[in-house]
Length: 101
Image (cartoon, rainbow, N blue to C red):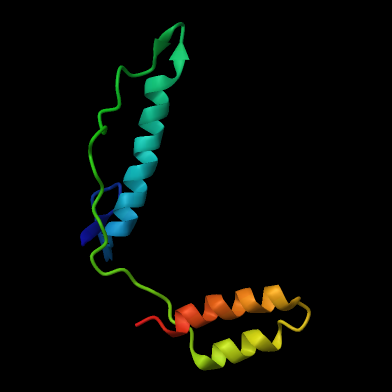
């Protein structure tokens, strides 16, 4: 994990997970790609993306939301207005979360 640090250098005491770092790095990477392809007066804003080839960290312990049986029952109560296919989609989605470890 990475310690979250404010712009003034002070830490707020919270950790930042690898997934957040990877998403932020992806945004920066996209902006730099744009800057390397956008042309002004026939020249790119930057010659190349300096982050090309840099891979973000991967999340070792991904968190998955698991639905409870009570939540499943409450969802089914509100699916009366859906057709059979809609009810089936809700059931598949929630059952996949019920069976997650």
